[in-house]
Image (cartoon, rainbow, N blue to C red; front, side):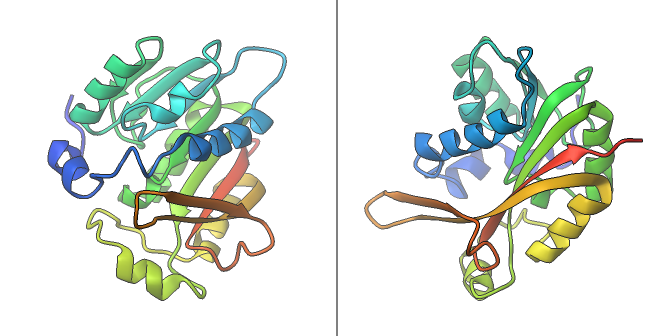
Length: 220
């Protein structure tokens, strides 16, 4: 299968741009995402969840093993690692705009992913087509506005970030295609010594360097 932009995200990408990947994804951060997903997921059945840009499968591994877990990533290197680490989940090499699995999914996640994807319209269309009518979409993106904007620009060395947008842009995008339920500000940074700071906030969400947005599928 040929995936657009696939060569950018292989072993070199992770070893150079995200060489501290495991430290940047500690369990407390993944458990925070799990909490958001569990609040959005149905309670009367084992949910089906798809993680777009799943990388090594770390987030899916934090979920209840009774859930039906699926992951996609454009990186063959990442997908191979994920399949080895989590054999009870189903993985495929694919991009956000071309989800290969049959829906519907109760929850779809994209954690620090869609800022890399050229067409946000294709992302929205793809996600909506695979969500159940009452399904939820959780996405996390860096934002480049507010008091922290200049710092985010300065520290961002990932050349594959195509959408360096404001939180207002992402909230409008979510409202155009979905029904926003909640959004939170995220402060995260790998500190000297290896400790990864990860704080979520509602009160100061307009000043953080990243946001998490939970939205429902929009009825057709």
